Length: 434
Image (tube, rainbow, N blue to C red; front, side):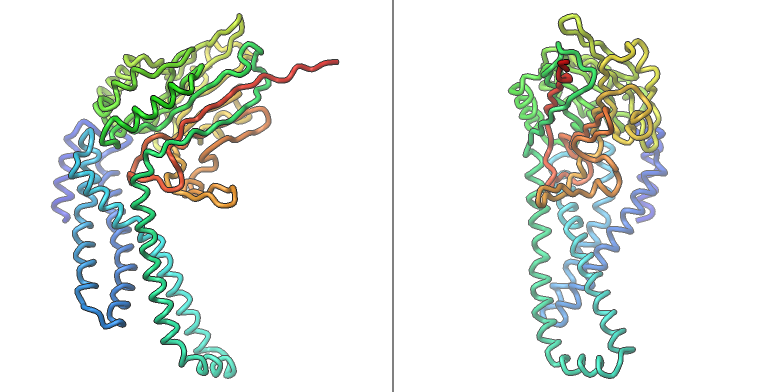
């Protein structure tokens, strides 16, 4: 295993694909850490399953086979991860391996949590039984005769319900194309009356290399066409690691249309390549009829009125390419200004209460790709990492919208967080009558 990893490391060190933000040492550290975490996940779940099989007196191979599969995936998963960073698009067989790896590991997270909680409860009960008072001990002894039957029933229910996470994750593979339109109406304090009702459609996080065919993006393009946007923006992460990934969707990318133009900013993944490939990616985007805003701005004019669309390069974890002061050069003081900045953490650090930005549009989080809707509340794993992770945020007269993304990165699934097309309708302040 170690020799294989070292061989992979040598290949990466000689590959031009990785930039300083995605170097070989970081990748190897990620692989080793991931392997340890995933194997620990298997150990927790499979030991519990092994005990369950033994108590039932079932055939031992029901416990042995999962261990064999676990060892296979311990090798397969790092290999597939490397392939995802080494080629433009996973072939069918490699994608199936990646999907199988996801289906093997991801559902075990809630199962492992359940096993740990059950073990903790059992340990607490034992402690209480050992050090508790005589009355408490006697009460436990009186009920102990029922414990084997109760435990048998609870274990059967628990392991039967363990199939549910596998079903949910399996469904998540098919929900990656379940496109959802999110609409918001935003009142901007300085928006000229000529722009009242302007419709901005936002796409984000295409991640072309994660798709096996151009069909999902073709559907998204068709949805955009039906929405008839005044302005179309794409807030970064066109690809995963290589500009060649864009070829898969290039035919549809060039057909994106909006009355006032199509504009874009760059994301962190758009920098996960060599300088030459990064330049190639920028050229491919620009040659697709998209105005790429890299620390720059463009005026939008209607009826003699002007607003500004500003775009910064990405700044976030491990990257610092944004130059907001440079991007704002030439913007008229007091004019309505809309910023395209891929990473929403840029809002708190550089925009909110610091810059004359009326509306910032971001992506990056994918909404976590996994979440739930409950009683009108949306919860996601992204909330653990990001303060602003999806939807509309407001601070005074400044707004931030975080798009949930179109594609996927990491596990090729979406559970409860569908891919998004955003429609933002901007409104002017209502006229004041004396």
